[in-house]
Structures are given as C-alpha cells and as structure tokens.
Length: 311
Ligand code: ASP
Image 1 (cartoon, rainbow, N blue to C red):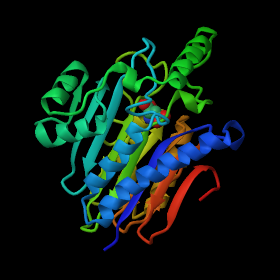
Image 2 (image 1 turned 120 degrees about the vertical axis):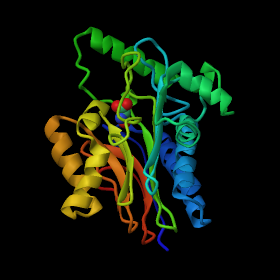
Image 3 (image 1 turned 90 degrees about the vertical axis):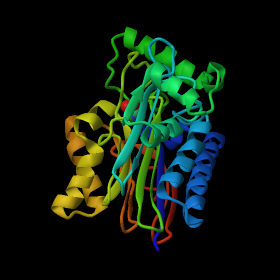
C-alpha cells in the first residue's frame, strides 16, 4: 500500500542571500527531523493522523519555526497560538485558538476532536481543557525567543511609521507549520499549527484553526496552508482544493495551483500549501519566494527544500 507525507514550516521571502549557511543547515535539519518523525509512523503501519501529529509536534518543539516554542508575538507582546487537525475518513476535526502555555497545541486540537462534542475551543477555556486533558504545559520563557521578540519591536516601529499590515516581506513576521499524510490503509489526515502573524491584534484568529481554510482533509485529499491567513479564510482555500478535485476531476497539483497561483494571488494572498491525495501524489506550491517544505510521496520521491526551483 502507498504511504506519503508532506510538511511545511512556513512560506515567505526566503532568499539564499538572506540566510547564512549555519541557519540554513538548522532549518533543513528541522525539516528532516519532522519528516522522519511522521514518515516513521507511516512506515510502521501507523495512522495518518498519528503521523501528521508527530511531524507537527517536532516542528512545534523546534524554536526556529513559528508554532509552539518560537511562536511570534501579538501587539500586546503575548503569544496566542492556534492549531487544527482533521481526519479525512471520518471527516472529523478539532481546532484551538488564542492559546498560551500549551507545549504542543496540535495535541490539544486533537483532544478537542476526540474528547469533546465541539470542533473549536479558544483562549482560557481551551487552556483549562488542556490541563484537564493532561497535556504538557510550559512557562512563558519556554516559548520566548529573542528573534521573535526583535521581530515584534521592528514590526511595531514599521506600523508606527505608516507601514501596511499587508507587507509580508520578512519571513520573521509570520510562518506556520503543517503536515498532511496518506497511510497504508488509505486514510488521509492534516494538521497545522502556528503563532499567527507578528503584531497581530490580540484575539485575532487566522486560517490555521478555521477548518476548510488552513486545514482540511476528506476522502480525496489533505491540505495544510501557510501564508496571509485572512486570504486563506476568505478563499476557503483547503476546502476549495478538495472541491476542485471532486467536482472538476482535477489532480491535486492542478487544484492546488488553481487556488494558490490563481484565486489567492488574484485576491492578493501570498503563501502556499502542502497537499496529498488518496493516490499518494503530493503538491507543494507557493506563490512567494520560498517555503520551508519536505515530503516523501507515494512513489518514494523525497524532497527537502526552502527556495524556489529546488524540487
Ligand atoms: N497563516 C498564518 C496566519 O495567518 C501565518 C503564516 O502561515 O504565515 O496566522
């Protein structure tokens, strides 16, 4: 049976010229580690849902990526994290928003799916549920990185000088992590986790926890997105990709291209997605300069890439 896994660690203006060799190696090592964490689950006959959670937990624990540890800060200097999971066969989903203190927000999203009658929980009540569910909690210092704090200060200054919130020219300001998988039993799943956008308004909820926008899985495909979340919500990007496969008989690559390069770019939305279909075909399109990405598709083809034109 075919297995496949794809993941991303955020998209944006990622240029070779802005990256030093050591940092680039660290990013690639982080992607490799998450790919291995997820793919090992699939190789062992495990479920797609377990594989995407394993991959996303690895990225949440890595302070280089904007999710869990290393999340960006909002305008008030707080980290408000979000995450979602979706099980494609049962078309069941769970998501969380406005979280602080939970080491792995993706596991809380999964607990919401599996252990509550709801799809989405937010803020203090979600943190209370995390404690009751026995999830690991961490103090603020665990999540704090100087890189993200400096990015907040720089962004606040830029906004104070009349800069637009639309500008995503620096990858320090945003990012997200996510994974999609097909397991040996033909099940598809998606998971996404993020700190959102630097200097976002307190209480802002992006595309990640909005099922059908930044995260989607059904019997046809699984999708996880990264980019300017407001546009992905307005385009219902994840669901739209699946709808194109179902109704127009497009391949996963065609459907992703139509949404990422067509619909989103037309609206002004930059970013990308990782997607896998029920045949193990993988698509990793992005309409900006780069996207941290990695995959092993159903044919065994392996990708670990950052910049355009690498795969
Ligand atoms: N999609 C995320 C958000 O808007 C950020 C990103 O992926 O860059 O919250």
